[in-house]
Structure formats: C-alpha cells, structure tokens
Image (cartoon, rainbow, N blue to C red):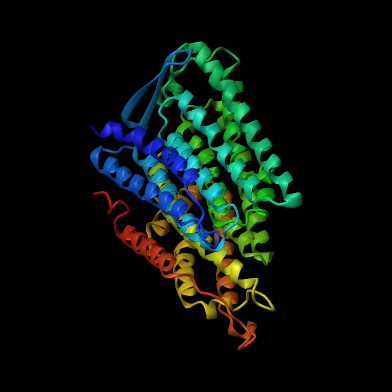
Length: 474
C-alpha cells in the first residue's frame, strides 16, 4: 500500500505546478493564489514523506520499498524508485528548504508566479532523483533538475545578466553528457535496466572500466563547487536576487554529493581511488578560498554562498573517507543544514531588500528588526556548530573521521570551518551594531509573523533533533 506513495510524492509537485500556472496575480502583484498552491503542495508532500518514512524499515545499506513503473517507450523496460533513510532525509530537507524559500517571496514580486511554477517542477525532479533506484531514472532526473533552474535564472535575470543562464546551462550540460556516456555503455552491455545497487557487481570490459568510472566521477564533480569546476555556480550567484531561486540553485550541488555517496567507494576501481588525495587537496584549497572570500566580502549573499559551499565540501570530504558509517551522519547533517541555510537565506534576502532603504549601509539594521534579529541569530548559531541541533554532533563525527583518515586535510578543513564561524559571527555583530545607524532617519520593516513563526519552528525541530535526530518519525 505504502509503495504507491512514492510515485505520488514524485509527481504531486508537477501537478501543483499546473495549478500555479493557472493562478492569477492579485492586486499589487503578489500572487497569493500561486503561493498558497505551492505551500499546500509542499506541506502535503511532507506529510506523505513522513508517512512513508514511518512505514518502512529504513536502512542505509540498501534502497528499500522498491516500486516499479513500466516504461512503454522503446527500448521497453521499467523505472525503479525506492526509499531509504539517506534519500528520504535529503528529500524532506529539500521540501523544508523550498517552503522557507516560498515564504521569503513576499518582498520579491518580479516574476513571482513563474518562479513558483519552475520551483514545483524542480521539486518534482529533485524528489525523483533522490528516490531513483535504477541507473536510467537516476540519469533522467539528474538532467531534468537543470531545466527548471535554467528557466528560473533566465526569468529573474535582466540586462547583461542574461548571459549568466547560458553559462549555468553549459557547465551542467557538460556534466550531463559525461554521465550519459557510461549510462549508455552500461545499458548496452546489460541490455536491461540496471539497479544502482548492482552497478558495483558489473563486469566491465578490459580497459573500459577506468574510462566509465572516470566519466561518472567528473559528472558528479561538475555539480560541486570544487576548483576549477566552481565557476558556474560562483558566476550565477551574483544575479540570484530572489530567495527562492537562490535556494533552488544552491540545492543543486547536493545531487553531485548524493551521486558520490551512491557510487563511492566500493564501486570504483583502484586507479580512481588512488586519486582521492588529489581531489581532497582541491577540496580544501577551494574551502580556504571560499572562507577568505566570504570574510572579505561585504555582500550578505556572497557570505551565504561561501558558508553553504564550505559545508558542502566538508560533506564531500566525508564521502571520500574510507568508512560507510558517515553516510548516516551526512544524512542527518544535510537535513539540518538545508533547513538552517534556507532559514538564513530567507532572512538575509529580507535584510538585503530593506537595507536598500538605508542611507549608509546594512550595518546595524537588525537593531530595527527584532524578530529578524532573533531568528537570524538562532539559525546562525546552529549553523556554525553550536550544540543546539544534530548538526553539531554529526559535523563533529565527520570532521573526526576526516582527521583520522588524513591529518593534513582534516586540519585545514577544521581551520576553514573555524574561519567560517568567525566571519559569520562578525557579520552578525555588524548587523547588530547600533553605532552604524543614523538615529531617527531609518524606516525599515521587520519580517512578518509568518516568517518569524517559520524560523522558530525550524529551530524547535533542530533543537529536538539534538536529542534524537529522527524524533519526528519514530
């Protein structure tokens, strides 16, 4: 019975996108109908995910609750979808992050209905990707995730920024082609649908194994901000002036991270595994660059970008470590991290929008926004590693394992996380510094009660997860 929930969870947001497209804008440009439809779709899907989560015996070693959907188009076959703790935790975190992104749209009227339409499309593609159990459906949704983001970026871009969507699509298109080659080769070899869990047992022809796995490896790396492949995401970040689009685009690299979790390390030949120190070095160099870039930047969005991708690279280093135990810790951390990051994005974009009304800068603006100040401070403290959520314990375990596997890499990673915490706390201090304000001349608005309540609920969920990460399921 509960197996039928999987295709419903995947395709319900796609159905919701049609209702969003048919909604009308209200007076003032704010599309209450579209926002309400999107919120209801996400909330309904969250309830279905929790029901599915509680109805199966989730396990990290294998995908469970497999459901088969016939594929009538030649070559005939079937699509397989499944659920395990890792995939469901990520899917649940993505739904929570998009819900917070939707709540942040009230200050951003331009292209709102179109942004919501493609956000529902992205949610459907992302859910299908993280629940895919066979190689073909895995690749299909890997590619589909790019399309709505490309449309969203083009929708909110203006003037010279129109070139940015092309760069975004080009980099991700290369990754899609790199993954298409091994998918086609494997399908030709087996002449049937191949489950992801069975890929490690495939017998590759002599000399082709290294090429197939190298192509898969590069396809996933292109989704992550590892130098020199980080340009596509850093360049597009400058034009993302919409909280929901910013949230969606910054969720895309999780697909590359998830790909490594599913394929690494058992399925890779020794030749690729021997390159791990090289890629670990690239990761820590990129982390250092992002940390110093975030420290020197005056833009709140640039600081958020640096913070988010430093932690993504930390989790990537955890995947590279030679222990499968970290899969559980990464699942817990990613769930909490997505909620923390999305909550901070929601408030940061509100602060940025209101700071344009100040005559000097955004310094001290949180003194005029007590609700935003309270929510942002709590989320930031949780995000940088204070012991108030499961994020603290699991990040501690991940960094310990990285240090145990490679002392040099682990030391640099810990230093980078420490530097990230310092520049985020410095940023909070600047936003709360009353001396930066021109007394009596500022008039800005605080976040509304709905966004304040959302931020408070996120913190309650994260605080309870500190005691028991899956308390809301079991």
